[in-house]
Every structure is written in structure tokens, then in C-alpha cells.
Image (cartoon, rainbow, N blue to C red):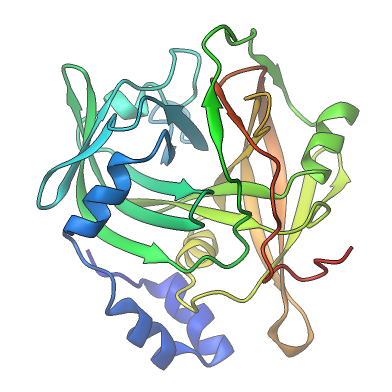
Length: 295
């Protein structure tokens, strides 16, 4: 699969970064190198992005396990033990052979992240992903969290569904320093990270969010996907309580002076699960790259 499609190329050309994107793109491969395999074995969670095959809605989700639950099991394959609960919107997608999926392993302890996009293959104990694209990202906008602990006696609460954000959920989003973005393209899917100081995501109304798209690697994989297909999913985590807030809807990018970009996201469905994850992370040290970091 080609790394860049028309949506990404249009944005690269509009901002004059095609040559830079081609240079950065040379670091993207199809194989899982030994350093990437070692990184994966240390991770207690993995974020996923895909489309629900029944509804077509795009969601971002997260699964956790004892480090080693995600492993490289071939030169172009990772295997995952376990999966999301049946109540998760991606439970069906992750059991669908050959379905496109994006993954991101993000380690707040080291401020490193790795993305692997490919095709699903269900296995007796979980699923595998056959890689099309494997690459690392720089640590920009990634908050450092020194430690985590597993809370074994914290069962998930009942999921709460809604068509828009409640006032409490709006406050949760506005206080976030991190979220994950799932997007899709023809024959592919992607999961990426967005970070900033609390307040970097603005709640414009119960049904609409916005955030400034900070300068990154100039590849425009996520925004390129959204330019071609506006379906998107957002995942917000409470890093202390394990709560997850999953949103699905559509996103569009608006351009301002000097190429500044704002992404607006319209909510069509919200899934709020208390204590969904058994991990409790320490308080963050905000990235020195965050704009308005002294706010």
C-alpha cells in the first residue's frame, strides 16, 4: 500500500512540505525491527483504530495486559493476547479477518511511541496484525508519566451511551492533556496521538469539539485520511481512574493565516466507561514542546 494518498498529498502541497514528507516517509517500513519488538514487549496497553463493519462508524479503543501481551511474532506481524470486551464498538472489527486496523503503542515513561497499521487476523487467543506500515514518531506533545500500577480490584462500570456530551463529559474533555485519533482511508486505518496542555481541546457545544493541529512530521497521514473520508473516532483516558470516553463522528480541517490548522469534530455517539482500564498512572509532566505550556 502506498504511504501517501491524494488526501495527504493535497495537504502537503498546500503547505509546501511534500519534499519533507517524502524524506520523513523513508523511515516508514513494513517490518518490525528488533528495537521495535523490544519496545512492544514492555507495553501494558495498545490503542487501536478501525471502522465498525456493521455501522461504518470509526472508533478508537484501547486494550491492556501484562507486558508481553503484545509481541512481534514475525518480520511483519504482531500478535495480541486478549481483546476488548463485547461492549466495545471495535469488538466485532477485531474479529473480522483482513479488516484494516491502525495501532499505536505509546509509552509515557519514555515518551516514545510506535505506530503499526495493517490487516487483522483473528487468533485462538486474540488477534494478529499483518503490517503494511511500521514507524516511530518523535516525542513532541507527549506527556511524561513516570510510573503505573495495575489495580486488580477495580472492575469496569457499566458503559453509558449518548448522542452528545454531558456537562460532566465536556469538563473531562476540556481537562484532557492527551487523546487518540482514529481515521480511515480506502483499504486502511490509522491510530495517532494528540497532546497538549489541558484546554488544548475545546468543547464548542455538546456535539462539537475543536483542537489546533500542532506542527508535526509533515506527513499528514491522519488529516489526509480525514480530507478523503471525514469519519473519525476519538479516545480520551483518565490516566488515574481508568475511565475511557470514546467518541465517533466526523472531522474536518479548517485553515487559517500562515497555514494554522484547526480540526473540528462533530459527535454522533459517545461511549463512557468508568474504570474500563486497570492501570493507574502517575501525574504528568507536560511536554516542553506544548504550546502555552505555562498556562
